[in-house]
Image (tube, rainbow, N blue to C red; front, side, top):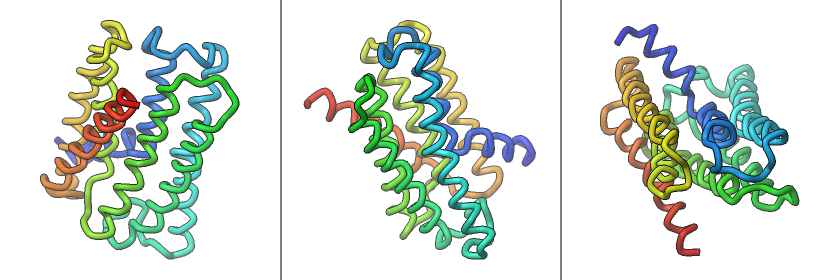
Length: 210
């Protein structure tokens, strides 16, 4: 894999963008999975997810960069990840609180997705205080786990299988890209992937037992 392709994959499938992709897929590409809100209003859910899981954390990280607190937006240095990841954890946490306390009609799946994502960011922050886990791998691992859960639970029809297969191929490509750019070691990307998949499985089991 060429560095240019690896960089493009890393940017397009940045871990802060993955939540917006997943909300779009669930709301618009998997018929019957989400009943509420109704189709004309679902853009509000995707827009809200984009704002709190990408736009706000990105603005915070950019502000830290321009203030000289961090020296790279790529956060290669593990020690410089704490504040950007903390900002992301707070933003995701606010979104999760809103999704679980809003008076709007929202399917439980949309609520649990945001809660799981907030937990993933928080755990990534805590792990990164001691060890450089791959946030990209956590993101694509969560995507694979969610689509696998929807497929195995029978909530989605046959279309979900194609999205699942695509996400598995994508996860392999993104992990390869992070290795190609020497941003992480194999252990770091595999640990991130396992964390992402495990979190989805854990949240799914918790919801089933509740």
